[in-house]
Length: 170
Image 1: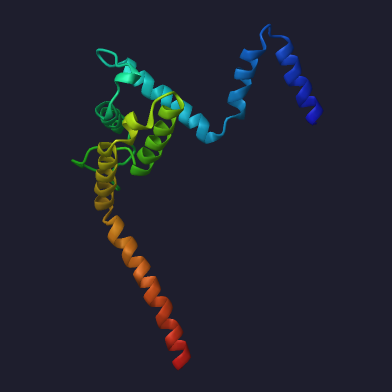
Image 2: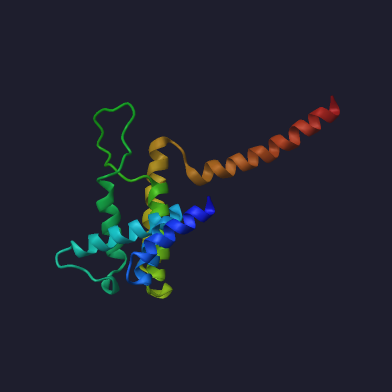
């Protein structure tokens, strides 16, 4: 089977007059899911900047543009009340989705020549925004993130100690 794949790629590249473009065209098939998402997110953010009036060039981009982009994405959010009914809370993207998006864009910025020192996706303002989204979504579900995690860990430690003591005394 592997020899057949080799012939197919050989045939495809022989039909092209320049070998470099065929290498670039074969790359997308080899990209991981993460790399594909990162490329798609980078292109989407670039398109968002080009659609601004006036258009914003990537070197001119700062954390405010990133925050505006995240708020723009909220209109496509899927967080809706259950059961559906009148709700005054705004639609938002899920915190986990935004966090992953920022991570991919942060990496893409540096891979595309941006310096880590000027990376608008690494700004403290972006981290604060993500924390606010996480906390507001957690509050809406009635789950305080940090407190519950700490309690769980403490309860597990206490529960792990208690059964051992009770089993020994029984």
